[in-house]
Image 1 (cartoon, one colour):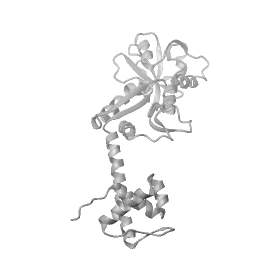
Image 2 (cartoon, rainbow, N blue to C red):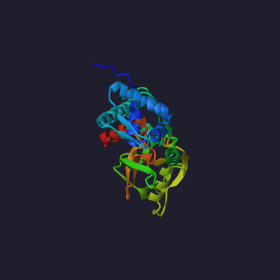
Image 3 (tube, rainbow, N blue to C red):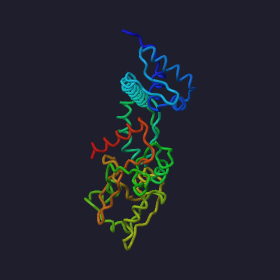
Length: 300
């Protein structure tokens, strides 16, 4: 069996020259000199024992043997390119950093399980979570700071892909010893005159809640505010008031708090995976993105 003693650059030189039909154009495409290009093709022809190209004063013509070998050379280069890309993807899934922006409730109650599953498959990839309010999460994804995000706003942005993964009804969070704790549901109008705890006006949840109660003749009074849901729950738990929160923000097995469905009207928010349309996800980020999407479908 003859030993292969030509290199990848020799194959590239032949394919480029055959496709361009010109030594000058092929040399320019490969960023080498014409003499260097000629030496590579001559080396390949010597190894194969057959002339691949006929050189004339005006143009380069490919021989019959050259046409046959051209197909094999192209296929070999394509296989090598694919192998390099696959290897690059595999390396990217073995190490690296994925940055995810998420609203606090998703960061607390949804992300950990998905990251745990992802980490079991890709232990070398680090994950950074930016847990902020909805506006900050959207800004982080749009600026490119985060690879993707978990949010309930962004559907109206033309450059944002909004992939809905779950719908959450708003619930009334209160202590288990509250007189309403045993109720099946509570109408929004019943909140009039109640001492309420709420997220701050910078929160996207606050805007949704205020839109829901805009029709009420007597609105509930916001006595206490906190920037994040965790702070709101702490204030409710201490007995300072009741709060309207998305369902995921209040675990069903909370020892001291419970959540009662709110009706008339029923108000929901849609949690989604958001990403930029013009920025493809790197392999590790794409793997975590799909892991979270699958986790949402499994728990639906």
